[in-house]
Length: 356
Length: 127
Image 1 (cartoon, rainbow over the protein chains, first blue to last red):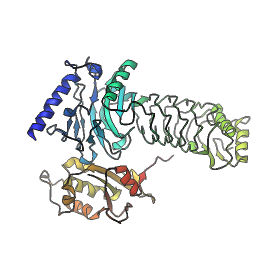
Image 2 (image 1 turned 45 degrees about the horizontal axis):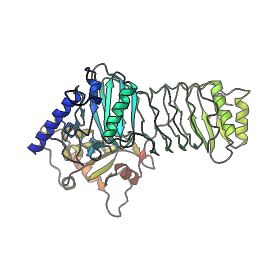
Image 3 (image 1 turned 90 degrees about the vertical axis):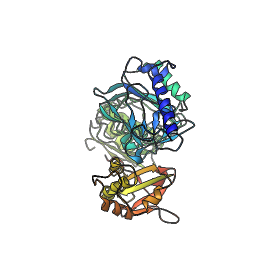
């Protein structure tokens, strides 16, 4: 046991030396070479992983619970988990922290001043870079909201740097993590339910490949600091339930392909700033379940008209047909109300602001 | 080996005392928090899932002893014993469904699948 612990210590020191640019290759280490705040978690460096929070007993093989992952940035912002059941599991090929998505999470203490910059998050199903603002205090590494939500099943690498990365730095960091075994693209993922739920620290999500995804249930629910929705390929998505629920800083929705969509329950509910909604959004939908879809929004008259006219254009006249909007403006007499009449004639139940 | 446990919210205080006895220390009092899973009847549960060693099940089913670290009597041993008595480790043909009258535990590598087997789903946000 002593030998193993000693090996772990040696590896840890070597990793730390590389992490601060102490003679090793550039890459992620160079992002912190100027003394920048942040953290770098790298399960491929076995010497950074420990079975106890005091870093006395090294992780030596697959299947062991990880109580501590040391920060390779050189800033000593280590990830710790005191509670036994909440510890992720070390796995190999690739080296990763497997997350049960029930309660597995590690905590890093973000120092005074917080971090505003870029987070590169590499997982077993995809890798992406996010713009983030993280306040001082405990921050969750692994599953968000006490371990429940994570965009994948395992953490292969993670960098958070105070100060945004350039596009070249992001690409290089992502490539380094992919070289360590992370999957580069989310393009093969069919179910992204709950992936980024409660990521209030993210101010800008990247444009990822969602072309194979059929289920976006609660994918970005309560991402309350997201302002702009990227132009995702949502052509395969049939379930948008709660996808942007309580994204309270979105003002203008991006036009997306909803041609496979049939479930829109709660999709934009409690998006209290949502004012501008593009025309033709629902022209080609496959089903009409919009219960609570626009509950407590701030849609302009033109926007609610756009939505209703688009639902008419969809031609949906069978199956579930319900629509609800509260908050914001009522539909116009000239455009919105005739659209509601048409929808009701097709069997829709329509509830809108103003009570028409 | 992994164990996944669903604890009715009313039993979480006792269950956290049992977790302190069976795991490592006072931090294990945070094993169960909140009711973020629900059954078909709307009963709320806290869930935990973790890797266990080969000795765990033997310890968990034996008479409980106050942990050596607990010199300050942090652990409520009576509460821990109540929780231990309420544990139902699902085996064989027993119904895997969670119940508000028991602490349901399932062995298996996939924790989320175990919770699904118990008939539990995440609590959804309400409008």
